[in-house]
Length: 318
Image (cartoon, helix red, strand yellow):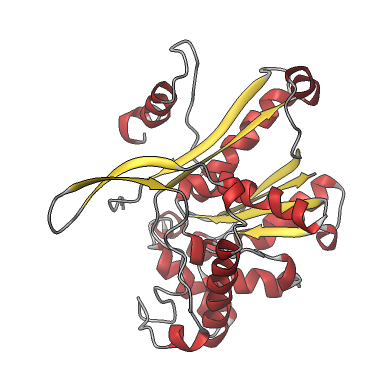
């Protein structure tokens, strides 16, 4: 079980947010796609007529290392950075391509932040922080991602030392971040009845398994699987939100599927924005929908690799 039986965090969050005690919650865990899985679960509950309205959400705090000890089972405990090195080694993703991809992620995110493209998807949160040196407590309003760095180039990233015995560096891996995101879902007729705007429609999702030692390749198989479910071709997708757990796996997926780079993470990805594990699946949707609207496009796809060896993807239309 997760800490506190698994549901403690979500129950506390719901009550803290002001929801009545009679409001029920449950916790789902599918590693890096937990936020997306939560949203998909709500969508399927609505489709099945089990509920009328629900919220799929995902929080995360990565503040401690958790580990446990047949070969495949052992591979599930591999550090994620090692799985990145395995992908790079097995499929020949060299350091230069990783650095180039990572630099572009930072550049796209910095440009998007400067142009205010993230404003519509972020709810400012008032919180307190403690100065690690003085211990002083300060109240702040968090209204933007603080992991985005301006001026990052392929050259500057090339100077970073590998974090392991390989090619992955702090600049070509997703950042350790805290964060939360939520998606409100309901039937179309319910939205009309309540006078709420309809931003998009959930179409389909797919989860696939891959070898744990190269878990990052998950989206390579999840993307075609979900497109098949939706009755479309991969080329029909207008915008992809592909989680950048590591540059090695993101580059490999893009190259193997022949994706148009201009369609992938147009506002940058987790290398620049961060990857709070449970949050990412929901956050990607919040980033995807406004971008589809800005581009006057219709079909979007969110996808991520999953620790222990899986990939998940979902299709959304506006």
